[in-house]
Length: 85
Image (cartoon, rainbow, N blue to C red; front, side, top):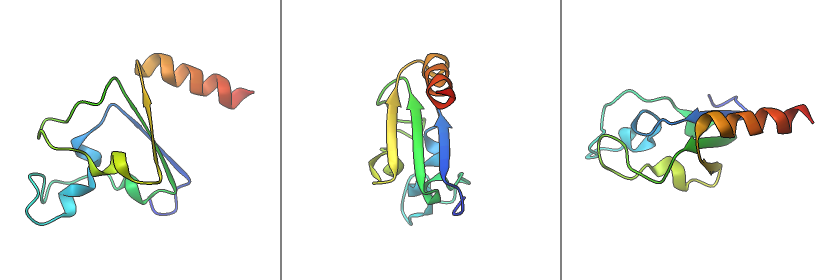
């Protein structure tokens, strides 16, 4: 994903957490999607809750990541309409 302009993450948490690459992390060794390597990341979630592992997601605090909170179906619909303009 290093050559990707925008990665859109909908509702995922642990499977996109770069902490899985860090030794000693509760997610260490878990296969993840390397969305943090994209130039820009947009994450759509209902709230600020943690994933199944119960740890913070480092991705959400990276400079290239923007969070959109709300119902994914509604938010994606708004994004599609904005892109069409």
